[in-house]
Length: 399
Ligand code: ACO
Image (cartoon, rainbow, N blue to C red; front, side, top):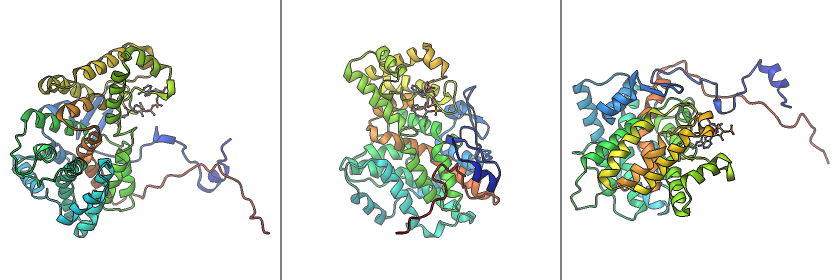
């Protein structure tokens, strides 16, 4: 019953592909995924090797510039990003305008959008130097913005960044340090956080990255484009899933139902319940990131004394799912979010911060994708077509 006749007549055939299940929107040399085999590579390097041997700053460089940096290049990149961690004092005023109980994600996207009012000297997407400056500023300032959003939400004063610390350490201090008191960064926690950031750093044309590209295709500046990406990531079907997983585990615990009974509800699609943290549009196999996250959870939850009961529920849900026909037939496996929430919780982050941590990780991917698109001067503005299903021509009733 679709009225596609008129469109076909005026434009030739169009592809109707809701959810872009089968539409490649771009060529890209950044990230490779084989969803059937469970493979993820950044610029050709397997995610497992990067998680094991690299660090988030180096991976950011790799994604953005295409090659691993030499030691000199990395040192310079490190020094430059550390130099840019401070926020303009006037930007801090924004934080006092938001309600105390605001979710930090819209605070983050608002502050990133506001950066374009403070840095009007770096908004030209085709000026290489300006793009470089906005790249450093974003990489350096997003963790500061995120830590400020957190401090604001708990009513504590914000801490100026300490540029002797690296990004993950500085962010932990910014969230959990208290002014005028020394904060000892736990190296194992900082390392685990750094690894989690690497695992989230890019994932080709996911919803938020496609959003960054679509907004950028109108030649919008990097701050505006990334701000839009943060808003897309806030959606529970995307970045909000790690928060949803923990809520689900807590509900199972509070209701005292067995993981097996909960899984029956999921299978019977009772009240549309889904097993959060399971399934993926692209991975029809174990998400390679989930495997690494599970290893981290094993180590860190023991050390930090994480919530054993919730971890146990999660593992039992996974065990049931991996053996159950419903999940096997639909190729539903744990995705990256299934265990991350438990780790973030053990680190001391409240649920509201989980998606913020995802955004910090995804930032270099958004920047790399935006820059790749901008450097191709043949890029066209993103403008999908539609199949019109409304009324045919009718006359306005003249009284
Ligand atoms: N629990 C139970 N059933 C599921 C789940 C799940 N988590 N995911 C998919 N299914 C079922 C669907 O009901 C459907 O079954 P049906 O054919 O009998 O109706 C089938 O599997 C296919 O599901 P779709 O929704 O068509 O798959 P799609 O590729 O559109 O969805 C998505 C992918 C959104 C990730 C989905 O698996 C989901 O909702 N998962 C839970 C939320 C989640 O964890 N999101 C994080 C995504 S990863 C990320 O952003 C990092």
